[in-house]
Image (cartoon, rainbow, N blue to C red; front, side):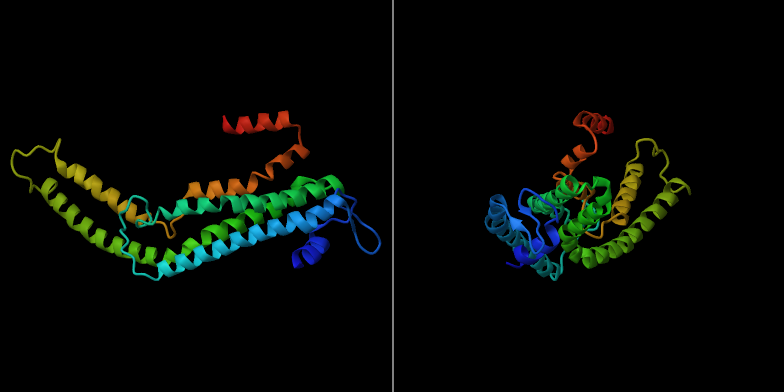
Length: 251
């Protein structure tokens, strides 16, 4: 009731004749399509949306409880998240929620473009804020692991730094200070490969992420928000020109 009678009527619905309502001096008059939308479609949509919010709340609570456990994180794990990199793939489950929010905004923008004569570039700031906020809502809960990941990185830098210091000193003494046994060839020696492996391991620790979030996850979630808004580009240019520009960006 609050969403329909307050938010939608006073903040979302536009003050112009549309397919769902005709404005008057005191209040807007809903058409039959508007009644169906306001009293049937919109409540069902809000119910499904609130269920998604509840699922998100359960997920955030679960992550918080897991983050209170003393996790056995491995700084040299190839995912650069101490072994928590798999959590980055879990956010894809919220793509339908992000697309729904994108569709809501796309519908509101379309109403203002078609009925009030606005242009899509006027809402560039709102679109950027929407994408940033939704990314924070979905990816932000993964930041609960940041303290443990930061501690694992500090410990890893100290421990692997000490190990690397020991190894490079022995390598230096053996191959540069005359400590190598007589007749042992440098070419093909496993010491060179071990030195490179040590450097790679230390680099993995040094570049650890402070949250199990990948660039691929960020791009996919942002694309999910923008997909419903992309068709509004057709209000600015013909689809042939739009297709040509998209192909030019890809190739």
